[in-house]
Image (cartoon, rainbow, N blue to C red; front, top):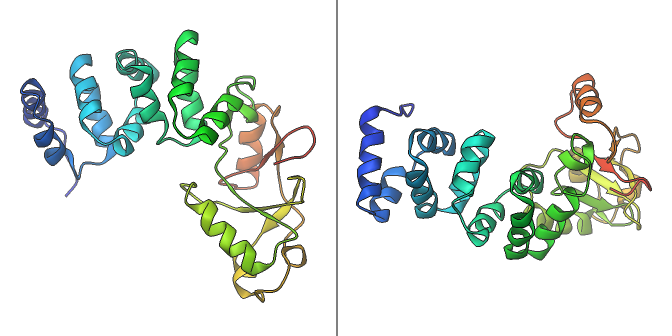
Amino acid sequence: MQFQLTTTFIENIEQLIAKKDRNALKEVLHDIHFADIAELLEELKAEEAVYLIKSLESEITSEALMELDEDDREKILSRLSPKEIAKEIEEMDTDDAADVVAELDDHIQQKVIEKIEDEEHASDIAELLTYDEDTAGALMAKELVQVKETWTVAGCVREMRRQAENVTRVHSIYVTDKDGKLKGRLSLKDLLTASTKTHISEIYIPKVDYVTVATEDEEVARIMQKYDLEAIPVVDEEGVL
């Protein structure tokens, strides 16, 4: 049965928050989808929403925060410490994380990034913040699966398993040379049917649509719509993915 956010349910949550009963909140909201959590946050007073965010797992609340509009999100984040914001940021993909950090006051942004425990994630977010707004560079996610053309199929599969731990959704497998320059894409079917000793250079598809970090977001959207793409690789001025 689809969840319905009723007045009675909201009042029940407000009562649990007033009692500061975090265990009960976790139990009641355990199986609630993050989109419904977001809707609940919109109905609560700012301080109540903050208490709820602090009471639940960041894996869920980070998704809920991304569902909110910027104003509602700001009301919550402005009441969290840099460390608490960083905890939410750590659960987000880099493109979403960079968007959220960009919404913060300038003097808070660096403090939040410094509190992110995953140094690579923090570095990726900081890099995205350097690109002009409304360009592919600012919109892109750093999480992707890329393999080297010199690898064998066996080595490729091992590395893909490692990379997949940090990727929420695998849309495509991109092939690069030893310097990280985009060479093409890899078909999962070709990968699975090739000999384990076959080199990726023998089976990858050299044709791949891509944009640069400076490409305007409207042009990115046009290309993706025209070619029915779920994702598109972004390269820098030297062609590095």
